[in-house]
Image 1 (cartoon, rainbow, N blue to C red):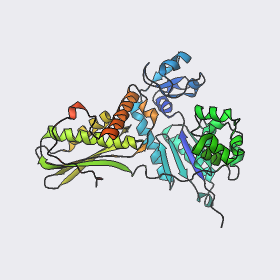
Image 2 (image 1 turned 135 degrees about the vertical axis):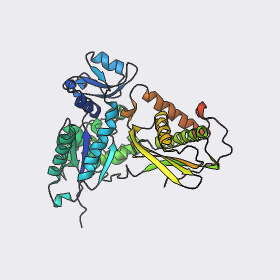
Image 3 (image 1 turned 180 degrees about the vertical axis):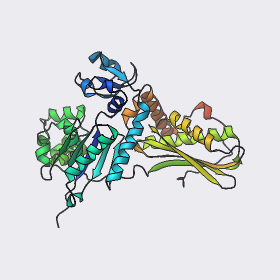
Image 4 (image 1 turned 30 degrees about the horizontal axis):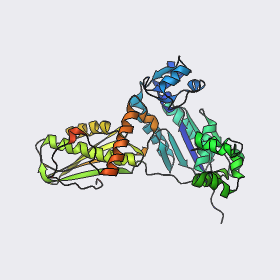
Length: 395
């Protein structure tokens, strides 16, 4: 019995942040637009008009403005990015059985088997049109037998286009493309491969596997497999269900609000560090309180995707203030980060966000190496010898 033919669709919102900005300010359409921080920041996203000047994401803003002095810099609709990401997610979830939210602006959909009922390509194009009609956002789509080929097809279809790679035509699509079209092949790897005479994907495919491994190790083996048109079809579908949480049970019940808030902030730090170590961002925060009589209450709120301590702590304090019944002794506090998606550097490239992320990651590394409390914020230091900690999943 032959293996089933897989149909993996990849959807990518075109210049997502720029598109949201244009929705809120139509006068930006057709102009070189840069989304990001000030002179010391970097470009989080840029319009196609700006790209014509050689500008790209993660470029220092100062350098981008030198390339295009007339560029318009904005992030006025920053608070709306998470809203639109969730909206598109809901539209996809309503129409397909299996999907993966790979980042805030891209999705994989498994359409395998749906070709028995209607055309896979026509279904994907209708879904793409439905998203644009409903949200006003342009979105590109690629379909192929493996997820990496679908993503490459999407990149070739941009902007606002559609491209299907029929089963059996994988190498016909891949081989003419330059090697740096393969996802994950950066400039360093591309230079290494070119130095060995490998310029197109076909060159990799026709190089003996043993030689590719000698050139680039395990990554060389992966590149060789991809050049043959073979890749994963597995989707990670638990993005919304998965969560990371921590709880703290106190040796003595407490109604000291200052103490409780301090413990809450420490829980947020610990949870956020775990989220960062998993290379994720959180889109929903939950605070849980168990009182002395074992009554449990909790409150959650969707948030702009983030992994920064100060942002999560401010939200946690707000939720605690709304939830806590003053005067009641508390036995346990808990914090949960959910709606996790892969960390997107774009979401941390505004203003000083990238510096904050790097600072927190540096603190995480030191705490991992020398002990959990090697570095902590001075405001959180307090005698906690009378409480004990219990890490568990929130129920």
